[in-house]
Image (spheres, rainbow, N blue to C red):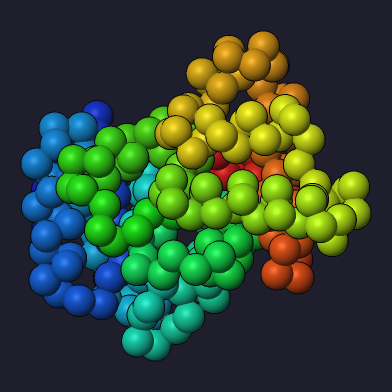
Length: 224
């Protein structure tokens, strides 16, 4: 079975789905496998199963639900990053409150999607993230921008925790789903400068809820 999947996935983005509801997994698999550039090569319905699977393969992207029955999704991501800093991680969640979004950014995920995303849009996002983009659902990214504006107006944060103009523009482009390559071109930045800006944005986002960015978030460019 694994050999067949390897042959089928040659030249495609290899994906793993971690979701406890079987019907959701089936639906995601059907949508993703229908695209000629994508191939689901593994599935897990729990944190323990996901860890066992991911120690045997390194997919291009992991689609992960935060609400697993045996393990907190954030804990699972941190466990995955102990041995895998290569695979992109896309959170697919019904939680759109600020705290889980900011915490996800702090531990170094590459995308945060809400579960009501249209299937074709999800396919597009998966491809963008596999290609190196960071992607946030526009609703949650817009809230992050609004939060920065509110805190800045109230002088509740020191200058080290407020976004600079280049950082605001980068975050705005990320909201639109623009890839790193095109962000760098649009803002006339070289890749190393863009990576520094991204690391700074993530640390400032994580500061809102008193969340400390992990080493992999501080070195976010290595995961993008």
